[in-house]
Image (cartoon, one colour):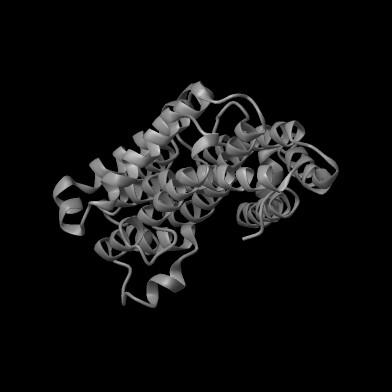
Length: 317
């Protein structure tokens, strides 16, 4: 792979990762906003919801350096339009657009227009305009713009290495976010035993599923009331659900095969190891190990794989 292609691969990989990250941030904020309206099921319930957002995004230290308390208003301000927060929707979409501009000749017009028009609208927003627009309307719009970009890419790009690296970034990022959402939310949403099966309990787990577009898919797949074990099974091992860890790593293994070369042997090995764990895993074994321990290990492995992909194929940051 030439240095030119390595640079192009880098732009495309991080372009898609940042778009996916912006969408997932919108999803997390949306469901947290909805759950924040519920009465707390227990002492770890809705009152911890905004702290959970910071745990999922890994930005608690950056937030608390600037804000005294994790309130809805403070966290939304920090995670939406704050240009000084590298994880905010503003920053991730700015980065995606900068990568698109650097790779302008390597992407299609439709992809560029989707990203550029999204960035131009975000760059003109102020906190007052965002509040007037409505947070949920904004979150839905971000998700729609992400879908538009991804649809443009799938519909218009050549199936060459540029396309493979673009998709690789999407699935590495998506797997990381699904694992983080499940890990944090699972423990926050566990209610007192007296609340299990109640209206609040059902709404909370339903909101978690909606945060990853899984509510209807859950009922199609399991045809029963929502249970924490089945939620975990859907988001971890069910390879028919496109946001599950298993499904994401089906794609990662395939995409690494498409760009494989001598430099990528270690990345392919790590991807195969992760995929085997998910492909042959059973949800009973996951819970026997401990859900938090399993997900923490997965996040570490997924991040290590991303670092190996960076070292093997992409321009060093």
